[in-house]
Length: 603
Image 1 (cartoon, rainbow, N blue to C red):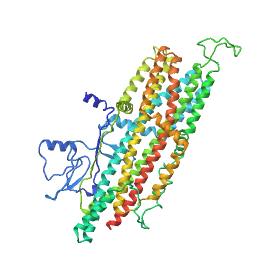
Image 2: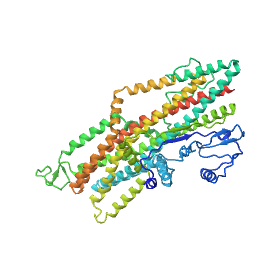
Image 3: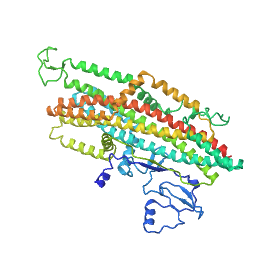
Image 4: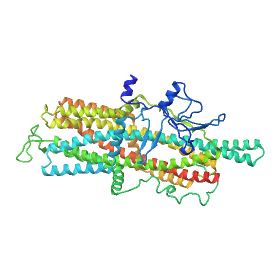
């Protein structure tokens, strides 16, 4: 059973993470022999490992052997047989990770999906969407918007959303996994930095004091003060030097923190569009439009001859019907166009956000490497970084089921299922004479599946954001603890400004209403409600023998709710992305201060 599960990619698994930061390459001796994991295992199994040999696996760490005075490099934690997670940020600002969120190494399908995710957020995909829309509008104008013309848009949009849901889910799961590894990397290095800075302080005290007991008592007092500190953001009472990087640098300016860079007109349009779409006003207008549409359905309309109507409203065509198929197709077409545009903008915003975060992280890691080199060379200390262990998160059985479905969507399994479904749909075209019902089948299927996907996307995203928030708060707290050890006054003005700005936003009525709607839509039991709605619609459509009207009844409410959920998802992304960019920028600001003071301390 385990082999079968692994074959399908371990869907639903969220194993714990073990991570150990690497030591800078500049500190690794040039005479070491570097071998990979497989070769190391072969050597161990054959008992041919020489004590003088040096092995590097996964993460490079270095220890100093006092007896042989030889340097030993090891990437994995020697106390465990578990393979450590590892990652690298490429020059194109994408992550290269050895293990995915399900605990398995990435395969070819994963790499292909990652490339598709990157393409979906590009300006090329944006232009493709608008070219398709323009062609569709022109064709409708030429042929007077026939029924099949609307069905084509609905089918095309449903298929596009079906594919985009796969890419959005994968992007969401991968991004959350990447940020957990980033926090592990920062924590692993911060632990070393605090230990080495304490040793430097201790050696200085030993040189300046003849009484060893006094020195130890002083160090105990320092440790006690740090451990008993209930407010890591508390001022130390010291002043920054005039040449210290401070508020003059852009990275310390609260007004610029968290903002995405705008490189062209497309970025500007994307920013404005995501802000407008993901707003409470848009939510209100959306439901007002739906109410108006429902009211219009009560007006008898010509063009549907499935049932006679006794009244004569035109004098020529006595066949009218309220809430007709054409009436349903009108809202389906409008929502289809809206979904097509919204998913494109959301994918772009996510891609730009990930690129922005990766760029800041590259700068943070560069400064961490410089700090690591300075401290280790000063103390001639090459002890491995601490192994950070993130245990598997506690989940309810319902959340495990949701994660299983999310993995089916965001992995190669979803692609295989989609290919089979599309193949079957095309195969039944001839028996169904390629008629209206056949055209609607694929739209109905993708619409119902996309409806459930919307609930799952919201629930999984809400949990991911909450976990990332905890990890980054821990990183910032450790940053501030290191600054206390260094005697650096915390950037209180910047933090106060950010907290004040956040407080002003969260206290507004608009934010509270939006937050309530977001929380309600992202609850795990909302997914259950979505499934029950789909089951009910399938029963109704089956009772109507999946006729055109029956399929439209299954399509219409799901598309409306799916569009609403997309608006909610865009709003949630806007809030969470801004918060994450603020936190990453704050960590970078801390690195500027820490690097400056350590450089000055070691001078």
